Structure formats: C-alpha cells, structure tokens
Image (cartoon, rainbow, N blue to C red):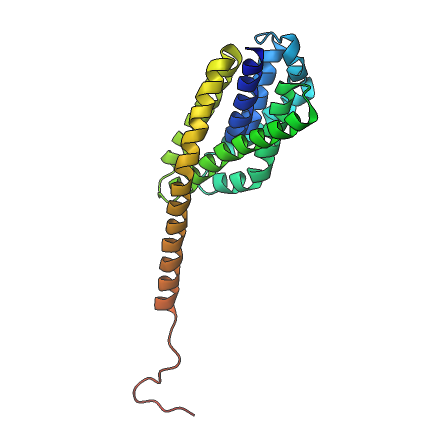
Length: 219
C-alpha cells in the first residue's frame, strides 16, 4: 500500500508538472508550508517545496506564465521553451516523492516520470497549436483556465487520495498516448495548409518579369 501511495504521488507530480510546472510546485509547497499536507516519513523529501525561495520563485514564474499562457501564439512560444524544462522538473519532483530507492529503480522511475511529464506537456502544447489557428483569443483563455483548474484538482486528489490519483493519472496518460499520434497528424496537416496558403499568396502578388508586356520591346 505504501509503495502505491508513493507511486501515485510521484506520477501525479510528474503529470501535473508537464501541464504547469510552476503552479504544481507552488501549490504543493503551499500545502507543505501551511501544514495542510502532513508529510509522513516517506514524504519528508518533499518538505523542500515549502521553502521560502522555492515558493517565491515558483510564484513569480507562475505569474508570468499566467499572462503568457493566455496570449495566442505567445503561449505556443512559451510551451516550446518549456519542452525540456517541464519534463526535467517533473522528473525531479517525482524522484523527490519516491525518496531513496535502489539505483536501478531510480533510473526506471526517472524514465517513467520524464515520459509522463513529456506526454502531458505534448498534449498541452499540441492543443494550444490547434487553438491558435482560430482568430479569437477566447479559446486560449478558456484552455488556460481549464488547465489551471485541472492542476489544482489533480494536486488535491494526489495529496488526499494518492492511490486514486495513481489510477486516474494512469488512465489519462494511456488515453493521451492513444490520442497524441492523431493530434500530431492534424497539426502537421494544419501547418501544410498554412504553408500552401502563404505560397499561393506570395505567388499571386509577385509580378512575372519573364513575360514582355504587349507593345514593348526588350532592349
């Protein structure tokens, strides 16, 4: 039972970090700091999340992301910058939750945690790319708020019912693995359509100097 709770906490931290690393760290740290999350001996390594500097850094970065995440195309630029940061951060959080383990299990845990964080990050970034093709900004704002709500809800489930969180996040990750290939194809097709439109636009607006106008002669 204990190992299942640790796995639920680790998988939850990794998955949520892929969605919003800074909010995940900030919420977990606040729960630790104000004793809303009473850490058992096996979770004492997570106590560092309640440190002043960790909370300040995570809070400031989340405030920046809160704004950037709601601006069309700026959100995709922000996601591209965090393609490495979120999986690495999720892996570090998950390893803190798992605590001391045999060396080979630490490697396995790091690979699984990094994969989980990369999966949720890819789903978020891909969804935003598709949403950015719409002319209105409302979809970006709605998606950003929904993601923040998901992180808050996921964090509460993770700390209150880690075994349920283990089952829930496992189902979510499997579903994303099934959906992501199709999403990638849709995104690639969307960019191909945009590329063709741009080429057509420039092709129509570019004068053809190879044809001599009627009534004129070449020098």
